[in-house]
Length: 207
Image 1 (tube, helix red, strand yellow):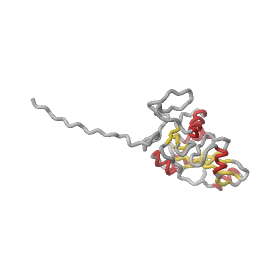
Image 2 (cartoon, helix red, strand yellow):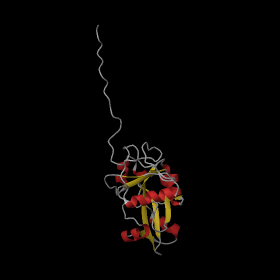
Image 3 (cartoon, one colour):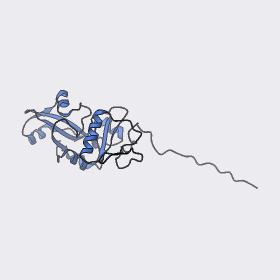
Image 4 (tube, one colour):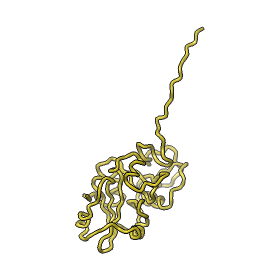
C-alpha cells in the first residue's frame, strides 16, 4: 500500500518580543485583559500573579488610582523612559498619546500641574492668563516637595499636596493614552475621559 507523504506546516509565533512587564509593541497592558491574575480585594486593579512588586513610588500611584475607583494597571519597563519619545517607543504608540505631567510654580508659590500631550509645548503665557499670575517651570526640589515624586516620573495623581491642574484638550483626540506612574520605569494606560475623572480638571487649550 502506498503511503502519502505529508509535509508538516511551518508554525509561526505571532507575538513580537516583549519588554518584561510591559505589553507588546502594539499595546500596553490593559486592566480589562489580564488572563492570569492573583486574587484581589474589592476595588483593587487586576495584577498578573507572576509580576514582581512595583517600586514604592509606582505603588503609591496604583493605590491612588484604585482609591478613585478606576481599574487601571500600572506596569514597569526594564529601562527608564524619561521623555515622551522614549515612552512612545516603549509602548508602540504616537508621541502625542503620551500624557506628560509638568509642574509649574506661580509667583504666589502655587504648584500648577499641566498634563499635556507629548507632542505639544505648553504656552506658559496662556496658563498664566488663566491663573491670573505669572508662572515658570518649577525647580526639582519644589516638584518633589509638592508632589512627592521626582522629575522624570511625575504622575497625574497621587500627589503629596493638592495642585492646580489643567489637562491638554489635544489628549482627547486619542482613544487611548499613557501616563507616567511615579517612577521613570512605570506607566499606565487609560482613556482621556478616565484621565479627566482621575484629576478632576477639565480639558483646556494649553499650547
